[in-house]
Length: 234
Image 1 (cartoon, one colour):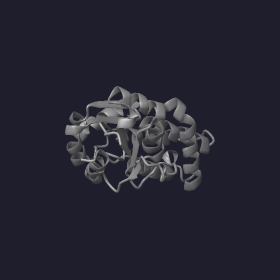
Image 2 (tube, helix red, strand yellow):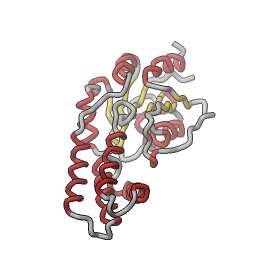
Image 3 (cartoon, helix red, strand yellow):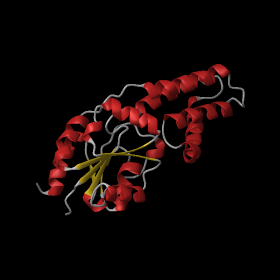
Image 4 (cartoon, helix red, strand yellow):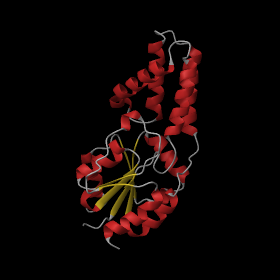
């Protein structure tokens, strides 16, 4: 097997908590609109808005906030009170200010792998928000490169791993999203390592490529150095 020289890390819900803040805001959203529709209908409408808006707003808090406002306008037949719009904007701003909380073993795993590998943070979302979170995480100095992309596809991974290493065949990507962090890098010719977080945004769901020889599932990032040692036969 080709030795792994480059390791890509997802950011949100791989290195630090993220999705739970979206879930908390969704609960507040449901409370604000409870006089107009039930929670199940509201969440379905919000998810539909997020799906159709990805091409315009991209991933992240700002697009999520705009989708909540759009959904509020729809379910109230354009009668949503200005107070509700103001609260939704405030909720989005709170999410953009929320302090970073690292996930277990994130710092230790990165510190253990950095001396012998090129580490690349590969994340999608709002540029300013992702830069803020990386700065607050205290992990920024350990990465050789940071790539904030509009979407994670096989060609994107192939280009990143060619630019920051010896190509996807000598690269491994670690993340909590099967759709974005595991399947595309495998399609590009690299390894995809799934570290489940527990909370999965519906848009990021995909079936695991369980039989693929370059797919691995770990319970946490603490197991990553051992996996790299096995792949590299150290």
